[in-house]
Structures are given as C-alpha cells and as structure tokens.
Image (cartoon, rainbow, N blue to C red; front, side, top):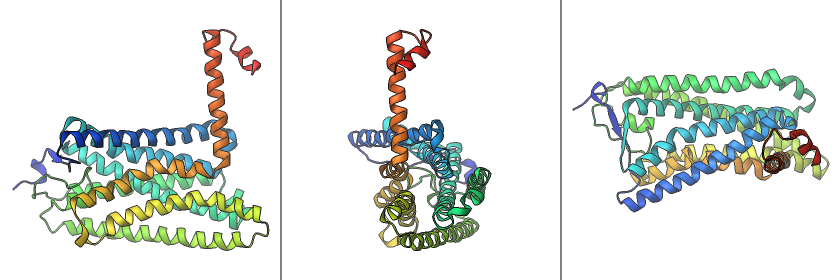
Length: 330
C-alpha cells in the first residue's frame, strides 16, 4: 500500500504496446499539435496586427485562441514525449501542473464562450446599446473574469485532488493526469469532498449552458425579425462559428464525463478524452475562419505584407538598404 506522500511519479495510459504504433501516435499528435499552433497563432497575430479587428468579438476570439493553445500544450507535448521515448512516467509535480493548467484553461475557455454568447446577444438584440454595454473596459473586465474564474477553479480542484490520500497505486488510466482518474486511486472517504466540488462545478457549468441556450434563443427570434435576407445572413454568419465551437466543446465534454459506466473502457475513454481535450483546440481556428470574411481578408493582407517584406529584404540583401523605398515601390 502506498500513499500520496510516497508517490514520486504516476504512470499514464500508453497509446499502444508496439513500437510502430507508438511512433504512429507520436506523428499523429505532432500533426494535430502543429495544426493547432499554426491556426491559433495566425488568429492571434492577425487580430493583434490588424486594427480593423480591434473589436470586442475579435478581442474575445484572441483570448479563445490563447486558451486553446494553453490547453493543448498542457497535455499533448507530454503524450508525444512518452510515445517517442517509450515511457509512461510523469513526475508527481508534473501531474499536479497538468491538472492545474488543464482545469485552468478549460474552465476559462468555457466561461469565455459564455461571455462571447453575451456579446453576440447584445450585438444582435440590442445593437443601439452595444457600445455602452460591451465597451473596451467592459470587454477587459469580462475577459479577466473568465481567466480569474478559471484560475480559481483550477486552484480549488488541484488542491482538493492532491490533498487526498492515494493508496491504490500510481497508474492513471488516461494519457494525461485527469481528475476523475486520479480520484480512483484514493482509498479515503474524503474523496466525497472533491466529488462535491465537481457537482458544484457541474451545476455552475449547467447554468452557463442555460445562459448560452437562452441567449441564442433570443438571437434567433431577433434574426428572424430582420426583413432583409442579406441582413439575416450577416447576423447568422457572425453567430454560427461561435455556436459551432460551443456545440463541439460541450458535446465532447458531456460524452467524456456523462457517458454510462457500463460502456466505459480504457480504449473508449482514451478516444473520448482526445476528442474533448485535443480536437477542439485544433478545429476551432478552422471553424472561426471558415465563414468569417473579415478574418480571412485580414489574414490575406497580413500574408501579402509578409511576402512583400521578405522579397524586399532579399532584393536589397539587408533591411538597412533603402527599407522605405522598397515598400513604396509596392
């Protein structure tokens, strides 16, 4: 028997037993991770560099991309390293850090999606009050509230989880340190304390979910009252990406945490965990840029500017050789 004070490392769930499949998982995760870095990095750079996108909607989108990068960087690099080096180990401190940062980024992202639903509701249902209700200061406060709430939840869950005595070994049946899997290692009735916190978190999450649903119900009513088809299409086009991201985020999370225990298995749990912890961060940039003409135009301008600057530097051999004249030629 062991307890949490004597545990120096945890053993994560391996993706495969054979070396070939381990390398396959490494390259697959590497591709997904690079896609997430590229997609979210482009959105962050484009929104930050283009002053036309300095609006509340794109400010929240920038925050969402930062959170996506944080959440996928918490779990995937360690999983890739384990597959590459054929190991399952993660240090006790590393496991604590994974639990904290994963809860932090995921919780903050959910709160931010709720704030973005409020932003769309005000923009469509109360456009005349938009500048007053969703000004720059209000945006900063709402984003800070989302980040702060995520931080608070992360601290509470991490402190509660690792204060429990762990006496059922150190094998975590997941590819990262997931709270429900760590709770299975506890042999004390005090796990009810963490279970109670999880129930309270679920109730709060459900409240956010109801708020999002009600907001979009009001948005739908307002959009259907718009007389012109072009106006309805424009209103829908600003809401569909956010609605798609919310649906993906909530559906994968519900499958992961609310599936019946009777159908639970290590392989199924592994697939579901990848769906809710890895896929959204890589897919969100695609969803948001697919129907967003402003974002695509700004990204195209940024790409053209970068290419012109590169050609200028190549032609002049150095940035110091007539940098202004080079740009004026174009």
